[in-house]
Image 1 (cartoon, one colour):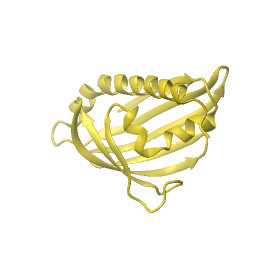
Image 2 (cartoon, rainbow, N blue to C red; image 1 turned 30 degrees about the vertical axis):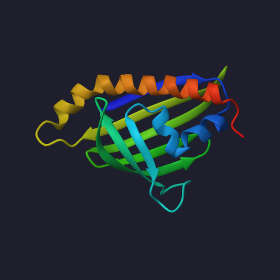
Image 3 (cartoon, rainbow, N blue to C red; image 1 turned 45 degrees about the vertical axis):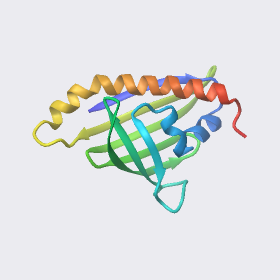
Image 4 (cartoon, rainbow, N blue to C red; image 1 turned 180 degrees about the vertical axis):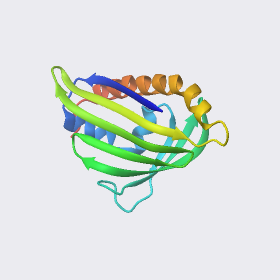
Length: 149
């Protein structure tokens, strides 16, 4: 299942990056995350390990291990999913008129016995909506906090 969304955030890529990698605060703007915890010894760079308590249809469902596989501040971050959900999520930041374009793409599979593909197809529109709402929420959050120091 592939889903991609983008939004323009009226600030620099460096400021957006700082908010994106403020791991524990992601649940404040990412609607399908109930809690994000860094479980590796380091917080930055390839190999950062995260435990994300993930919501399905608004209900905390499972804790998903994730690992950062690409770290190119402030332009590109890739995370590998590793449980019920497998695949990769990519965040890309590009300078555009009016700020920074934040492009979020997911290429994932749901490993649910017998109904994985059907579950993925049913969940795809929900995921699109969640990603779009999360991006709007992130945009509002970045605007509200102002410049990151």
